[in-house]
Image (cartoon, rainbow, N blue to C red):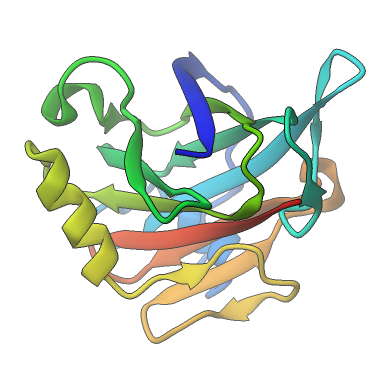
Length: 199
């Protein structure tokens, strides 16, 4: 495993945008007036510890051994969130939830962010964070990893707004949320990943 982890569930309050009948990922994410018809949405942002502060960072950056990063994740609906890492050695591990059981500790709520902190060890290579937002809980870690492996997954760090694949829509956030992105799936499940360069 190439990164270590600790996670905390914290409230992250900010004003919701008005729900309008538009097709951008941001509008679909904030379509809270009709939760059953709204897509399954995820807002994410990667941060790096710099000068004692968590600063937004481009996921396409090159990271070094010892770098500390934080992944901020927020769902637009009650769901079960899982984050698995595939390290530079090819091994898989579940980073979130890091405590409790997969079934109960994975539950997330609208407008409450999960902060997942990690640190790169001394084994450089490609690191991939796989994110799954599901309506149903998973109770077996091995089966969860197999589910993530078998699911179609588009990288979250795209440079343009648009459709990543048939079911997943992406939009880069406004400058106020630098390097933040909205992803919305038309279905009940959302799978995405963040590819990180560790040199």
